[in-house]
Length: 332
Image (cartoon, rainbow, N blue to C red):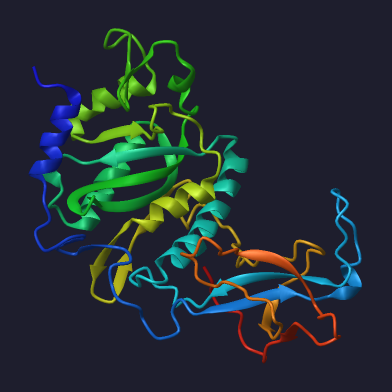
């Protein structure tokens, strides 16, 4: 009898990309194209040099008088197609997702859940719009109230369409604390006879026989279905290797529905901006003119994303100056 791991390997090997790695029909994995322009990924500095507010001592006894707070930032075109800026795009979008889900969580009194939604292989060639509608219907009949779908059309470059869902299940994922929840590798299943429980794990298997969708809770490497600790981190990671439906002028990665749809949930999402770790003030673009060597290569082991530095050298010359006025822009 073939085991679960062997069956998974056979299924994955049987699904391949028609076009090339990370591309299949109208589907394309994010970050596969070349840089949009010559400014993509160019490093620059932002910081706070408000000395009047920096003469403080923190809880560890460190005094910041005469120092400023600085970060290495990077120019970004903000496009999910760009291989250089895809991480900046994913980070920006994750803040928007977090803002909407946090607000919905407050209103519903429910925690954000992370599930994986996979259609049958026969349905994967349906038009994307039809497939999204089917996925949303599959979630609703299983008791999901709403949330966001993040499209993933590939696994390791091979076409294997599925969605990652972040949102809300009516009454929450109660199976998580059930003593009858069993593990089989990274898969979970209900240990009580079929039809004797109304929990999610039995409910989803019942509907699978009619709609063909596999809807399962996301687990860690050990098969544990922990609650999401950080919605932003989870969404940023999933967006970082998500897929785009590239049809004409519009491209689509995420879909909101149910109680979290744009019609049902109005949320004012403020643009995320980093703040000074000393005084909490806004950061503005700076120019480094001191003798200190600052590594701006993110791949270098010596790279440090944020740091404190003296504003003036021992001879009184400035180490940092305000940059010419310009838009802060997106950054990674």
